[in-house]
Length: 610
Figure 1 (cartoon, rainbow, N blue to C red):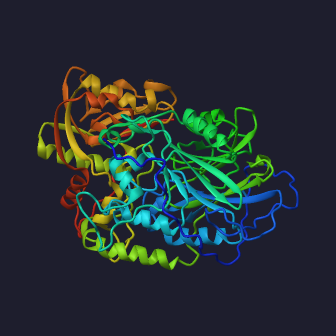
Figure 2: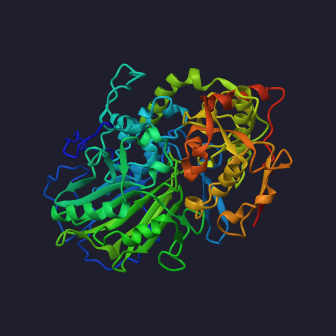
Figure 3: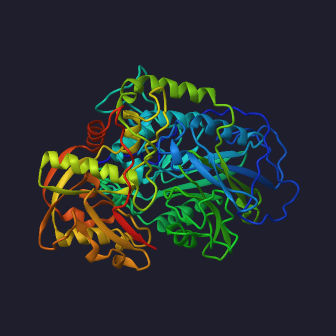
């Protein structure tokens, strides 16, 4: 049975004096038109904290509260490589440029600058702080990331689906501390755990029917109270390994938030923010796109829209995540009033600065005054020395493993696009591994969500350009899945390809990356399963025979029916192989050398009609 952290468990006291740095002007734009407020609205207060003790400051009726937020960090302590470390910025003339962004050394500096002069300041996150992490964090079961978040003065976060990659017991350890149950302590100090609460309002223990972690948390200062409710997407079991969610039930996001909003109201907490690990798809990829320019809510689509429209008006703002997109939008609540919904991309490349104006007379947020904007975590600011020390300390432990060369490439091998060069490379690696285990293996399939970063030509350290290190390969495939072999009929194989664009994947297709020899046409002018042109499917030039049997290699997540590929879970004669990262490493080593590096695959196996 999964370990639990009851909601009544006392929270370790956090530091009440924090670094305040030099003045910086914070520009906010785009969420709601500001309404006139009395001149008494201020940012003054007694400093950051949660003790509610005053220091004699005069108090007007209205008090501005700064809410800093980010989401989907995924253990990216060092600046992410390639496109994963850039954001797109729309210019005044309508053109776009990319900006290098991310890295906790810079994130810490930006957050500390933003807090300056805002004594009523809260820092919150929207889940997936850990999981699918680069080697620097993933090698140590994300203890380095929790330590970094503690030093960032994170106040609260929701869980995300990746918090369950290693199961509820490991999540409880990250919250409460203690050394890893099998690998022990990595240093001479016992891991202390997070000094901020993880919120999991809609994640219940199947036996107790209670949340496995706190469902909500209340920030208090000088009589001001703001409640936070944290949920992850209800569909988490479909995108996490079965072992990771064993013994857990995931409830509807809207019903859960509305339930706990009522509970907070009964406790006298009327200002409420929902931290939701589910998101949307903005009409633009630029982080500073005016999401409301076509009209409130028209600039974003996806699951968060329906969720936002049904969450009780008692909730004043939504901090979201999961889709790795950037947006600051307004979506009407059930009463028809606009409400701010934000997301700060991923990997620590952005943070959101939202101003909530608290009405001391009502205890609620004056929603017409909410302002919000995303800001780039640029790398042109000084690095935070404490974060540099943290990274150096963990890198010292990781370097002997991470710096080992495992392959050589001629250029960047990217993961972008419907079919990506890196996706093809990984599928080919799994096919080669499958053939070693069983010469009858015919093809391999790879889920795009399992590819977490590109392989870049430029050196990440002292290894030299074109060298692929174990750390870089780990960052690409950090999940520790196994490569499994299963038998499928040709009819099942065709159905698998159709499941990419139908059923749960119809609205947001998940196009599998395919090994060499498999080809077909994807006609995006059609709808649903018809987008896969059945008579175009070929294996080594021959049509797929619906009555024949095909041996397919895939990672254990896909082989279990993950990502909506239920037919993959129905295969027979299963053989469980080695770690998928080991298969990838083995392929790189066997097929490249310093004198004969590997070129990016052409990514021409799927013909896309638009």
